[in-house]
Length: 421
Image (cartoon, rainbow, N blue to C red; front, side, top):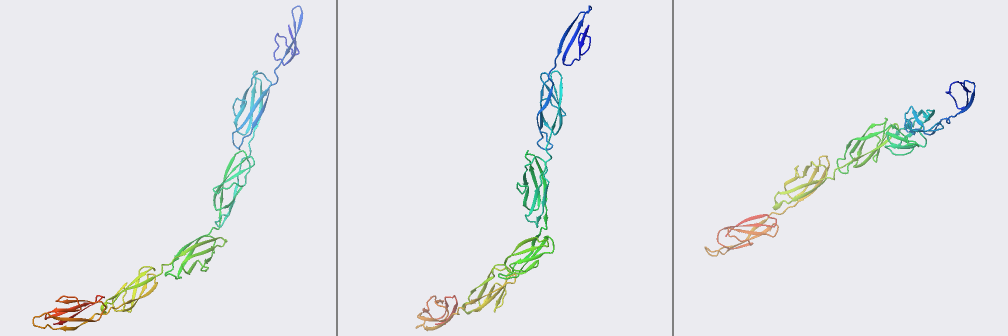
């Protein structure tokens, strides 16, 4: 028989023993006995732990990790991570949360070790703005960053800038991107509004009619802003939306609305070129009323009207004029007026007569002669005798008969005189 102590039991094999020292008393049928001392040993306690863990870098990320290690137990270890799965000592791509790793040794002994993977608070930008006054670059936008992992950097678009506040902004839409110390980023849009933007444009412009005049005008119309409006024209002065009596040049108007917003617009008043006119003439030749005077206008605004004095006439050229002074008044299509005077000269008519004749001495002879003398005209003169021919002042070798001489002066005037030999 067998008697085990201290565990009890009377079989040859004692089971369910913990580590320790046991005795087994064996007796035969004669009550002879022997005592055997047996020591039951055990492997060291399997003890698992987390050697290292890394939190998620950015809120909502999955780059956390944890590494388990074990001591004690028997032989090599296996790992089972929950709820992420994985059977390596290190679990990667973990999101924030609670995990357990079950470590099992070669004897099937296990130890369950918990680990928590943390993450930083969600990174926020919280952008806000102040309005751009009167449509100018006076707006601001600010980012009030929070969460993440401190030491923030900023980038504004489209304005540029890397501070928590972007200044000197026009009205419009902007975005700010905030990065934390871990490289996490968040983008937040913000709108910079405009207070009282004022817009004005010249609606009508009337240019100066005549060179050097001052009958130009301009009118400005305000399309946005807060009424009522005030106006200040420069350099002409004037406080209305319309300015008149303007000369050629640049004129500016400063418009201020009831909110104090100001805009300045410039209009250009033009003028035509100076209206000019000159008179060219042809003489009243040979004492006849055949002179002409022509007006030669320039500048102003074409579409000229002519008025001649004292001859009358409304064309650019006055004809059939006697010698004298003639004045033309030119009016352009804008009513601008210019006068000019030209002189139609006179060339005198040729006056000639036969001053002497020589009769033929004998019947049928040809020793007659005649001399023409010019008493008026423009020298030098040419002579043309007919039918005898000849171009001298005195024609000789003439037979009895009728002759004419045509005298032409330097102005082209002619006179024909007859003579009988």
